[in-house]
Length: 208
Image (tube, rainbow, N blue to C red; front, side, top):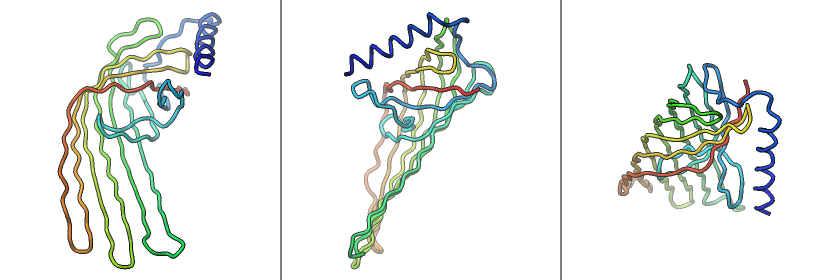
């Protein structure tokens, strides 16, 4: 099945180049804008929300890209998620909430045909909570993550209004958490990570 999917994708790209009346050039001019999606991996070939996490903390959400002038684009990822569980008895309620955002900027270094190479940077902040309400006690665990990374990637336009991109990120993130039970608060260890990470394919769909 995967071979069939790959073959169809290659065929679509081939047909696009064969039928194109004008050469495909990257849309990196002032006013160009796109919505972003991420492939979850070629193994399952699923498309999901854009990855807006830091290098070691992953969250999926919605993403957008807008060019403020030629070669310079700003992008933003946003994640909001909430779940809750209430037993039939009404006791021991549990709710979880996470929110995160990741603003960034990318600068295109050079373009060759339908391919453009870019660099830039982005910041990530995420915060989450896990709250439990019981008949005997209440507890809440909160956690937050801050990350900063430089990026280097390339973007390949397969159609005039659609492109794939992949990038490396060099950065760090710092995570902390604490748990409160009644009047007692326990601080958990703080974790700091630093390194290079490679992210999966991102699909950009332009609509201008």
